Structures are given as C-alpha cells and as structure tokens.
Amino acid sequence: MRVESMSPGARWLYALKPASWPKVLVPALCGQAVGAAVAGRISAGALAFGALWMIADVAFVVLLNDWGDREVDALKRRMFPDGSSPKTIPDGILPAHALLLAGLGAGAAALLVAWGAGAALDRPLLLPLTALALLVFAAYTLPPLRLNYRGGGELLEMAGVGGVLPLLHAYAQCGALAPAWLAALLPGLLLCALASALASGLSDEQSDRAGGKRTAATLLGNAATRRATEALVGLGALLWPAASLLGDAAPPPWSVAPATAVALCFRARLVRKSAAAVTNAFAAQAAYKRELHRAIWGGTTALAAAVLAAGLRAGRGAA
Image 1 (cartoon, helix red, strand yellow):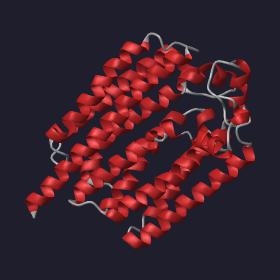
Image 2 (cartoon, helix red, strand yellow; image 1 turned 45 degrees about the horizontal axis):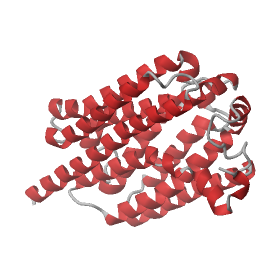
Image 3 (cartoon, rainbow, N blue to C red; image 1 turned 135 degrees about the vertical axis):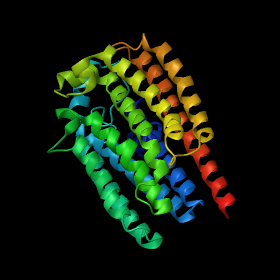
Image 4 (cartoon, rainbow, N blue to C red; image 1 turned 60 degrees about the vertical axis):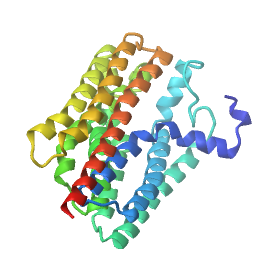
C-alpha cells in the first residue's frame, strides 16, 4: 500500500480497521440475541440502539487504541520496517491529534446514543453501562492507568468484551441487567474473550517488550501464550453445553450444541496452525489468528442464532 496515494476516505477507513470490528460486534450481537430470547420477542428499538451504539463504540476503541499505542507502534516500525502492516500514526496515514479528537467524539456519541435510547426504551441503566464500557477501555490503554502496559490488560479486555458488552445489549433488549440465560453463558464468553486478548499480543511480542508493555506474550513468551489461547477457547466452548446440562435457568442443550461444534472445529484448525506461529512469523501468526477468530466469532454467532430461536420458540409456546 502506498500511503501517499490514499484518499482521505481511505485513510479514515484504514484507521477504523473494519476487519477488527467483529471482536466487539459479535459479543454485542450475542447479548442482543440472548436478551430477545429472554423477552420472547425482538425489540426493533433495541436493535437500532445496538447498531448506532456499536458504530460509535468501535470508533472510540479503535482510534484511541492507535493513539495510545503510537509510541510502541513507532518502535515496531523501526524494528520491522518491512515486516508488518502499516501503522496509522507512525506511517503518516493520519496524525495523532486527528485520531484523538475523533476517538473522543465517538465516545461522546456513544454516551449520547445511550442517553437517548435509555429514555426512549425505558432503560435507565444504558447510560451508566455505556460509561462503564468506555471506562474499561480507558483503563486498558489510556493514561493514567494504561493496564495494557502495566499488566492485566488481557483480563480487562476479557471483562469488557466478554462481560460488559453482552450485558449491556441484553439489557437493551429485555430490561434485565443479568438475565439467567446470559449468566449461564457468560463464563464461556469470558474465556473466549480472554483467548482473543492473549493472542492479540503475539505479533507485537518483541516490540511490546522493548517498549515496556507487560502482556502475556512479553511475560510468558510465544509458545506459552499460544497454549493458553488454545486451552481457553476450547474450555470456553465446552462451558456452553455444560451450563445447559447443569443449570435449570439456562438455554436448552440443543440451542448451544451447534455453537460448541463450530468453535471446536475451528479450534482444531487453530491447533494445526500453531506450530508455525512462532515469534516474528507474522504471516503464520495472521493465519493462526484467523482460525482463532473463526472459532470465537463463528461459535458465538451460532450461539446467538440458536439461543434466539430457542427463546422465541419458548415465547410462542407460552403464548
């Protein structure tokens, strides 16, 4: 890619990284589906809120993450001038102040959407839940906490992506802060989110270590991080049917079995890609992460669809 030839629109599209959006869109969709299943119907207003809110939230996260990581991204570019994808700020795609202002504006838009939807849908907790979601990210990458640099960033990402996002969107649909079906599925969602968070540091292992970031990859190394990632995604997928079998207030087993099958199928492919995804093998790491994303995003999407079908079916039966 020649940065000089990029149009302004192409620069912003690159900065927004649409290929990474499913990381937050899929857990939100799952929350919407579980909330609708619990309510026994789909709220068009909650869906509209979810779509608008996610656009603002994704922009907030992606843009400010690049702003917060600008120094270590510049370090990685110096270490690997030809070995990694373009970096938004170090490669001059957009200036740092533009990302900062746009990211803060997107966060304000997310709060505004939550405030309006809270009043329209009679969901007064949408605004504080949105504030919590934004604060989790701020603690992850922005001063003064910057836990992604100090240590614990992966756990914070697990809480935000695997916990807060599904809870917020389920609440928008059904008005319950922690409906029983979602509570039963949350352990699996949290472990899958943690697996994704651990793997995200693999391609930045050496530059993060040189820049002082404390991530699983910099502390434990490449091989241990891959082993943990594979174990977590497998265990997370297995917790979905376990919740259905062990708890009464959980989705029926038939509704979660397809999701587990999808996730475990792609996990098997993930394990086969693992041996090549060593430190600085950027192409092999990208292939490894593709299988991981298919396991998590594919499994969670299948979970959302089947659980929604089970809830709507139960609602029609009760009617």
